[in-house]
Image (cartoon, rainbow, N blue to C red; front, side, top):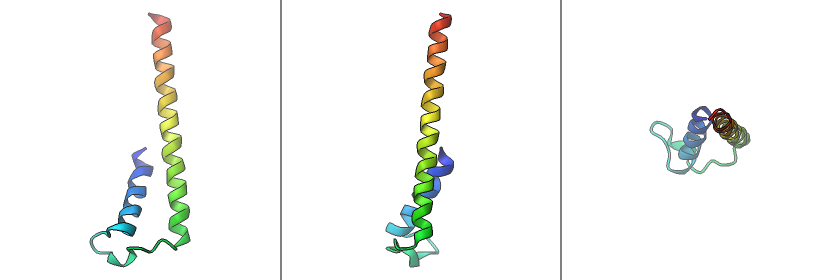
Amino acid sequence: MLLGAAPFAAYLASRTVGVPGDPGDVGNWGYWVGTVSLFIEAALVMLSVSVLIAARQRGSAELAAQG
């Protein structure tokens, strides 16, 4: 999950407040590759969260069946 969330947060930071060593990208929201990357990373995070929730629910159900 962090694998997708960290680049997402870094991209947002670089476009809003800027990052050290790269102040030229502040406000540059028109770069289409970055926008596509945001959608892919958001999908990766949502998929990761859904898999974690499903695994947790499955584990709870198995514990209830055993106990």
